[in-house]
Structures are given as structure tokens and as C-alpha cells.
Amino acid sequence: MRFVAGCCFALMVIAATREPAWPQEEDDSVRAFAVHIDRTPKQSWPGEGVYLGNGFVITAAHVAGLGLWRWPSVEIAGAVFPTTVVKDGHFHNVDLMLLSVDVRQIPASLGLRHMTLCKKAPWAGETVVVAIAEGVKYSQALSSARLPPGLPAKFRTAIGYVPGSGDSGSGVFDANRKCLLGIITRLITAPGSVENGGRPRPVAKYFVPAATIAAFIPAGIQF
Image 1 (spheres, rainbow, N blue to C red):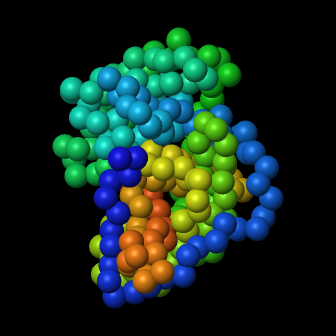
Image 2 (cartoon, rainbow, N blue to C red):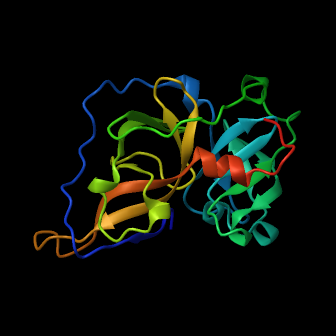
């Protein structure tokens, strides 16, 4: 599955989040950093990741699989590059994986770029950009009051669910500063209604925040 299992809570029903009405022009300044992550053998769905710079790529650990056995590769503009697993969050209780690619093999149009981690968390209602290689979508940062009750504190950095936006491993970016706010790793759901047969409804997407990513990356790595 492209997401790990979503969280389902029976005590609260949240109205479906509509896609914001602002313009949907492609934002190439962040889209350029979106890459695909492939397992070995290649999965049937495209995994997502974000290029940080200097050959380093960050993604969700469950997207890349168990690094010691899955040999994840990075796909950029149709070209596939082997990776080295720098750090696997499966062994650190955080759903992140840091990969490295030989920067000399990466097209200069991307290899020379560098992504900045945001220093500040988004405020509730702030516009954010979710980027994958195929395009971008816009959403909003959610306050904890709009999330299902009982949701563990670690999953409260979330954006509103927008159909067709990036799945696990996709980057969430500040719409103005173009820095990386976090990496999506989980779908948050609420109980369904009689009309939809009681199936859980997607209401938000949790992202691992930039501060957690910064703490996860080993000391001495520069991107």
C-alpha cells in the first residue's frame, strides 16, 4: 500500500476537506525536488521522495522498504540510480529513510540544487504545497482541533486531505519560502457514514515535520 494503515477514530466525524480554490499552477521551484523511489523488485505503484542536495534523498521508510533487503533506487526524469541507505528509520522508531546517490550521476539541473528545511512550523490555515514529480497540489495546515480526538500527539502535524495530492514520501513545502516543511507518511481517517457503507473517510495527511527530519539526519551531513 502507498500509505501505512490510516488512523480511524469513531468519536468524531469531520467534514470532507475540499481542495482550496487558489490557482493550481505548477510550482517548478519545489516540483523539481520531487523524485520517485523504487524498491527491488520494483513495486506496482510509484514511491515518492524529496531530493535534498549533494546526492541525498529523504523519503518515508515504509515506502523504500527494509533498506538492507529492498535495495531502493531513485528515479529522476526516467533515469534510475542505485542508492546507499544512510539511515533507516525502521530501526529508530521514525518513519523516515535517508538515501544517498552518486551526485556525479544526477543531471546537473537537479544535482546542483539544494533544499532548505523550514525553521518554523506552519500556522493553522497556512497554504502549503505538496509536490510529486507529476505536479503539485495545494492544501492547508490543520490545527489539532480539526483532527480526530485521541490522535497521538506525534501525528498532529497534518494538512487537509486533497484528492490526487502526494502520498507517503511526498514533500510538503512552504508556499512562500519554498522550504521543506515535512514528509507525508500517514493518511488520517474518520468514521464513514451510512451513505458510504461505513468505510473510513480520509480527512488529513500526517507529515513528519522538518524539525524531526533535521534531528534524524546524522551529524556532519551537508546538503
